[in-house]
Image (cartoon, rainbow over all chains, first blue to last red; front, side, top):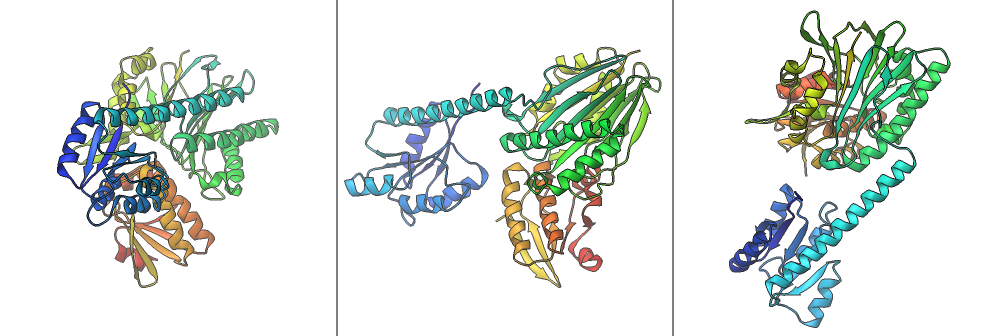
Length: 379
Length: 111
């Protein structure tokens, strides 16, 4: 279902607010009403509407002054603005239109016509937005830029799956990558650039480029330690003034298919969740490393462990663990682990998590990208 | 304004006037904090007393300000974290990056 558009209606006449407000709501808009500029600013603190529809003649601050004040505030100046007023002499209309507004509409215009104008404008914005997303996505695909691999890797004795849901279907800051060096070494990467939507998405590629380069470089030097690789990644990011402005977490796992040993190093990431089949228990593996680029050394450690048949390992990003409670929102890893535990220890755990709605339910509660990498030892 | 500030001893106290500190206010918070640091405030104590929830974008903005402060020879301390936010700081090791105190007075003594 498309998102309902929000309109902020500003008019000193309670009757106009009521009549136009009702007509807009009947058309499916969410309508916020303000009697004057001051009330409008108070509402804007909570919500940014898709459009502001404002009167000109109001006691105190008039519509032109209101528009000028909005233009002076960076987060408000780009909200589309229309005047709806009975002051329609030539000079006022020209002065109003010069304030970078979408339209200047006479209050005598039939309300159905006003709504058509609003719908046409919002539709054109939506189409332009979708067109831009399509163009960016095809450019990203042409450059082979994916923040999540298209296929799951195959490693003897292991089953590896991904689940990723972006916030409001925008590409975001979570990134997953798998680098198979040869039949023996495979690196699994989960990162979360701190931010959302496009800005974070672009930075995720900056990070991925450094990570891929560092993995290849270390391996070519015969060093497959995740700690050494993380230190290299951290060092380049620390010295890059552009990338280090935006911070990222990183979980890096190397699977050695020959020895069946895994090594793990983390940077400001959430702990790995490890389900041990023999103990029938979910434990955490916590790393010591700081967020990438925060300090020169990073304080990274390396965990080495071997998974037994039936054991399961999960890497997650923080989008999954936020929770809405009566007291407000909170970040709660404990709740997440106790809720996910009942799905673990079965051969089809991942498919059940994915298909019975647990992960989607978690993601729908969130205002962030959500990612999970699921590793299972088979034989 | 997200931050309400006042000087106390040699530090600037910056109270975050938000309940939910998230992506929608992270950029403004970062801009305000950077501006305070750039205008010569070396020691800033960021007070989270009113905040009940913080997301990673907001934490990213806080760390970015810390890097700026440290480059200018200063520091940022954090006070007034509720137990959930304190756990989050520990979970992502930000407790090793920031000096965390219970309240402003303790921060002034410890700083």
